[in-house]
Image 1 (tube, rainbow, N blue to C red):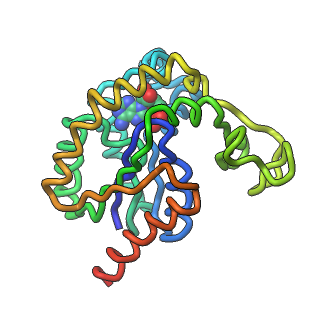
Image 2 (tube, rainbow, N blue to C red):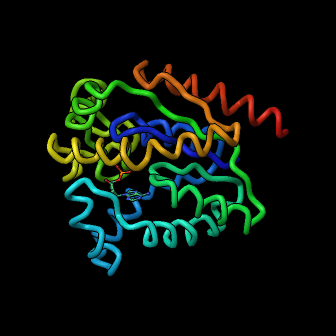
Length: 221
Ligand code: AMP
């Protein structure tokens, strides 16, 4: 199963992506995570991406498309993949169509998480992850069961993204509406576009997403 999870920053893509990855055994590909790894490793891509990411803008299409093309040809993608944070522009969506066609693959679903703008800024400014396993948390919406200890791996180290501050969030939201939202007609025209209510609680959103994916899975079984 090959899936795109779409939605503005803070919509809950990363949280849902992890659930989907665990349930369906498909690879999770988050271009933001890949870029952060490049920045941390100080590579050429990382050097080019760093200041753009800090300002909330989008990294040039050619960098992202070649990074993604290499990633989906890795063996762990053979059972399928979930794209989180890609495509983010119409040229990226068109390049993905081409990459999939070249590899004889197809998209099964594009699932958009719909969330009110006002909620996004609060969601983003409160979020943090486990520094060891990446499990996502939030100051109010999802605290670890034992304060300061990761539910998943027991680590006591947590990190916040440098671009999760109010000013950068506004730029990221603007980039989403100006450059990413225009890809929606591209996918609704292909008949594989689904929208879920991202304002519901995490478990309910997961339920809505799984209902869509289970239907698709059963159809193709
Ligand atoms: P994310 O973790 O998906 O919120 O991405 C963090 C930042 O990485 C974004 O604000 C962009 O600067 C950059 N980025 C991630 N994915 C893409 C993409 N598909 N195209 C362009 N820039 C991206």
